[in-house]
Length: 349
Image (cartoon, rainbow, N blue to C red; front, side, top):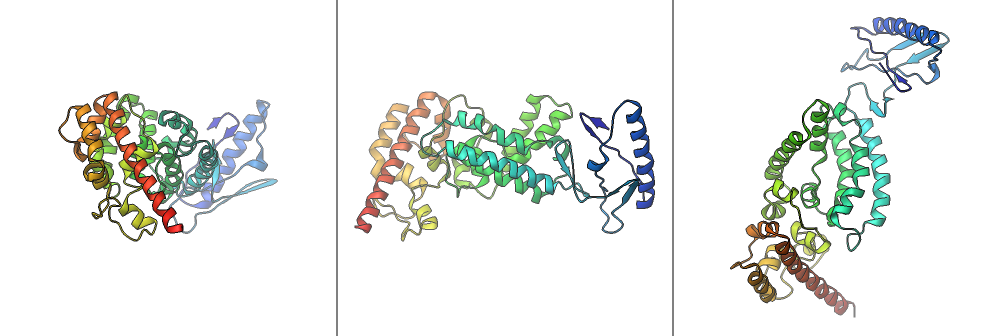
């Protein structure tokens, strides 16, 4: 097998010595053919590897005087790191390291507050996705869960920047809010396209699988109450997720129950009326402090009440509805943040 300046010789055998013999013969044939065609094989750069699940007798040493090629634990071929058991653990680590280099640069230009809009953020972060998914049609069906998790860590970092979420937000919720499909499903989609499936059909299958994952996920249950239909949310033609809107969508933000859990706030009671727990549902949909603002929004939207179950459905209905509800959520969250800062100033005085 040859592509560009890489050549691979593949042999099979039941025992190591027979494999060594066959590879030695094949290597001689390749070198002879290349010499006839004015080509040269760089034997000093040549590596060997044994693909096997055996725990013993799983190494070899190919002799080709004056060179000797012992089997390696990992070789790189066409940019993909191959290990003996084809678990792709080393490839996952290498891809994650390359992706994290890009993430560090993107973090500087994509702050949660202000900065580029969500669509622009997704375009900028495709460099990370491309690095992580390189060779996905090859490794997607063999990679171990541990190796995939290694790459998901880097992918989550960039999803947080697209969604403008707090870093405590779960992988599942961040994927939904950012409209970035889970990495494992993207890898499977690329394999299906490589095997000949139409891109549209492959994306449909991805959305079906994503919906199934989302319905059964243990994390992000508050986000699931708001965003139940993955396809409708993903395919929306309008609406950007801002820093304050993401707090409402994820439940990770200026809420009593969140601050009590992650920021050592003494109480999870509502700062305005003392009701506990001070959850996102209470703050945004029930707290009397913002009743007038909610009523004004309902009058504009021509609805009797804004509920958890209907909020996102209403936002997806039209651009005007999205803007009006997003403004309401942002106004509430800014007021909560100002109140929290005021309390800290009083305590520090």
